[in-house]
Length: 112
Image 1 (spheres, rainbow, N blue to C red):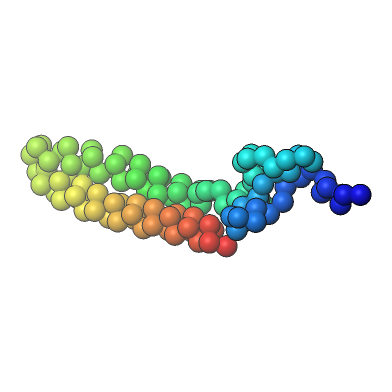
Image 2: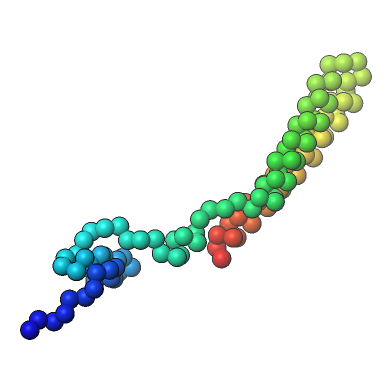
């Protein structure tokens, strides 16, 4: 009398730690292992709140900064050019800050 064979299913691979092989009831098959819960949880998601702030900051910077800079050729356009430059620097700084927050919070969420 022979020993009973294991039921078909996924079993740990004795030759490759951390991997699984499928037993069909008669022989081992080289099928890709099904995704584990850990792999499914590691999907990439963006922290949308900070990403939206970065986008709105960039749009606001460009919508107000470019018209101010385009008035530099008009008489007394030096003030507009100065204000446009300062506006672009200020808005660009906030765009970078919100982008950094979005990236940081996205990466922090992946580490959990």
